[in-house]
Amino acid sequence: MDVFGSLNLNELALGLSNLSMFPCFDTAHYIISVMSLREQPGALEVSQRSPFACWFSSMLYCFGGAVLSALMMADAPVAPLSNTTNLLLASLMWYLVFYCPLDAVYSLASVLPVRLVLTAMKEVTRTWKVLGGVTQAGRKYKDGLFVMIAVGWAKGAGGGLLSNFEQLVRGVWKPETNELLKMSYPTKVTLLGSVVFSLHQCRFLPIHTHQLIFIYTLFIVTNKVCLQMASLMTVLSKNYLHSDLDIQRHNNTCFLLFHGFYPVSFHLLPVFFCHHYARAAASDVTVTSTPNWSIYTIKKTLIIHEYPKLHLAN
Image (cartoon, rainbow, N blue to C red; front, side, top):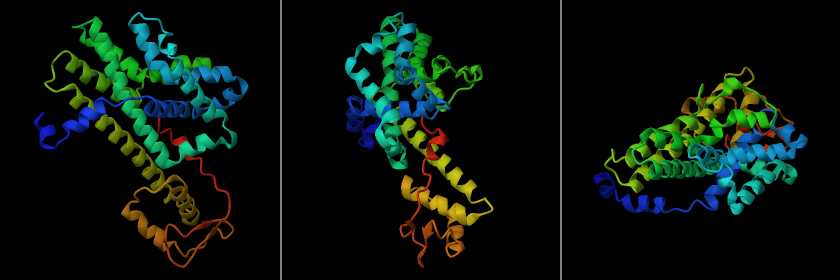
């Protein structure tokens, strides 16, 4: 494309297309996938009651797309688990997220900047999964456009499409959560990518493969990060509508300190300054004379694990 040449993006696109997913990006995928499972209702109880069921559910989250696409292509569903290195790496991430002493790994990965980076890396792996599924189907069914779309979709979003089966492993049955009835964002964006890559595989799109990889990856990463930030801003805005603005200012300040800095809407700044000298929870926070984000001394242990309840990662 002329745009890539004029912006000197061809080398960047080629570098991205040759990027290896193992081990860094695969590790990020496993961490976010297992965290997504942990944040499901009742998952922690299952991890204590039946570690094997918890591990099996985690493997479905990590390798569900590969298993589902293998079934669709009449391959052995256990073939994706034949890579011992990846299986051991995913199992290690499962153990650390659920059973690490002091819950250190999950707490660290839940910090906003860390989680955003891990989520962005996981979205990069989605591109390779979709492209791999489309290419795999294209080798066997050269003119099977809809087969390519289906296999690419399954490989990129198999964890969500198999969610009902995964729930059964944990002893939960919620048919109303079927992804085909109510698609989540990852399922929708994966379907979009599968359609685009399938059209390219059938030579309907006059664009190089590495350029299409770059465009789609940039789109899903940017979109995912923006969605997470928008969700956080929504929560912050709602907090300021609470009657006790003093407590909400205190909670949101701690949220900024412990989960990383993110842009604050200008209409919220007057609220912060107006309530700077207001009555504060003296036993919790020491307020100095200057309204600075960095000069609040936290004296009391605060609940900082509300962020995972937003279910921002999938």
